[in-house]
Structures are given as structure tokens and as C-alpha cells.
Amino acid sequence: MPKYVTCPEPFAPLFDMAENLIVPYFDDFKRNPEEGSITVAEERYVIYRGDSMAIAMKQQLTSVLGNGAGVVIYQIGKATGAADAKFYFEKTGVQDPGQRLAMGPVSFALGGYANVTILPESAPSPNEDYLLVYDHPNSYEAEAHIKAGLKTDNPVDFLNAGYSAGWCSEAFGLKLEAKEITCKAMGDPQCRFVMAPGRRLRDRVKEMKAIYGL
Image (cartoon, rainbow, N blue to C red):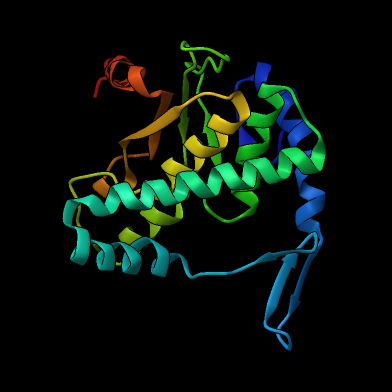
């Protein structure tokens, strides 16, 4: 069974494969403070504090953009997820959309964003019927808000949602969007997301809320 992703049994072989591909890259972690660099498999990485990204950046953007701050953070996440996906797809040569998808949550966990639980309602297909329903236990964005004692009536995992949408869009060649429907920062028991093609996302969210009694 996969170590970094929780999923229904039929998906397990995909995530086992993904871990075998992605983990060796992150095992090649080098920190060279004399040169001011951190590399993973010879690729330059930069470490930010979770609180700085989840709270300080959002507050600064909100002071400039108001309610549009969340959209900007989501789009930053989406661009980052898409770029990382392209990099790993080229590195590994993986072509199968399902295998490409599976690599995302593994990279996501190893990068410190959150771990991922894929829920049984998920049916990721390479067409307009695509549906992914998943939780982000231990999300750095929600954790930062809880740790800081910040009260919120809205979900806060904008970058997490965008990253997963960007990665999966690249994996399947679809224009996918993700929406957080419950959030620990709001007092919910989990941070839960629904991902679908943009024009179908609203309906998919309604369906999942009905299933979960939200």
C-alpha cells in the first residue's frame, strides 16, 4: 500500500508506482548554505515558512486586492502545480494520465503542502466526466490559521486547491478547477476538495455536498 497517499484499493498500484518514481528525487536533497542554495535532484528549491505563505502573503494581498486575494493565491498555486507536473512528466517519461495524476499527491506530500486522501466518489477520466474528491489532512494553510487562532467563515486552502488543479490539468490535458467545500480552519473535521472541469464544477460541488450532507 502507498506510504504517502491514502486511497481506495483500486488506486493503490498507481500511487505505489508514483512513490517509486518520485521519492528518489527528494532523497537527493542537498543544502549548501555557503552558496545560499537548496537543491532536490539538482533542481533549485526555496524554503518558505508555512505561516508566511498562508497568512502573511494573504494579508498583504488582501490589503491590495480585497476579496480577490484568494483568487490570486489559487492561480499562483495552479501555475506552480502545472509547472511541477510538466517537470516531473518530462523527467520520468510517464504518459498515462492516471499515473501522471498519482505522481501529484506524492510530490505534494514530499513538498510539505499536505498529505492526500482520495475518496471513493472519485472517477478521474480524460473527459468532461472527470471527478476527483479528496481531503488534505494536515494542510499547511489550514494549520497556520488554526495555530494563529484566526477565525474564518470561508475555506483558506487556496494554494493547495490551485496546485492540485494545475497538476491534474496537465496530467489529463483538461481545464480542471478545484473547490474546497469544508475546511479545518472553519472548524470542519477535514479540508475536503472537489475537482472537475470548470464548467461542471458548480454542479459537481452540489452533488458532493448533497452526498456528504453539507
